[in-house]
Image (cartoon, rainbow, N blue to C red; front, side):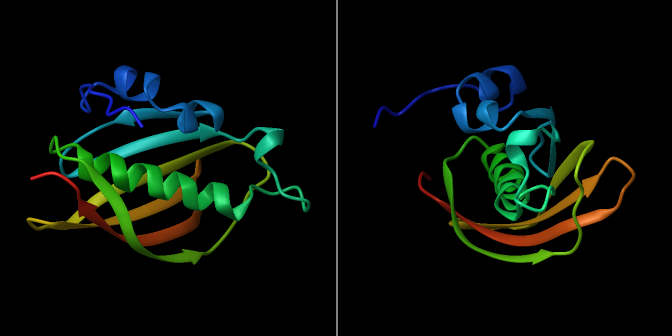
Amino acid sequence: MEDKKFNVLSPEEYLANNPFMQHNHMYITEIGTETSEIRMEVHPDGLNIMGQVHGGLLYSLADVVTGLTARADGRKYVTQSAHVNFIGNVSAGLIIAKGDIVKRGRSIVIVRGIVTDENGKLLLETTTNMFCLSK
């Protein structure tokens, strides 16, 4: 797999190099070394058989924003582990995911992810350990 080089602090460039985010209608509203935010309008292709956003997509939002927040320091990270609480769900509207650094170490970054609807209703929270691939 080719190692793509791009500016992680440029939302447009990051999104242009991330087909998963594009496919799932995600866009970046903030990138920072302490906090980041992405948003997604709910589309029919993201709904489960019960007509609500698929739990895997809710978790994907959290995983993307925690990874984005970790990578804002210019290093490469992958998810090592995550503890996820599914709390609520929606069928339509805007979903907002925020990542906040809990602790940034040499090899591991702990990031808290929160996913809400546009009215602030909590849908999911996660604590994610991101492992650094580059020093």
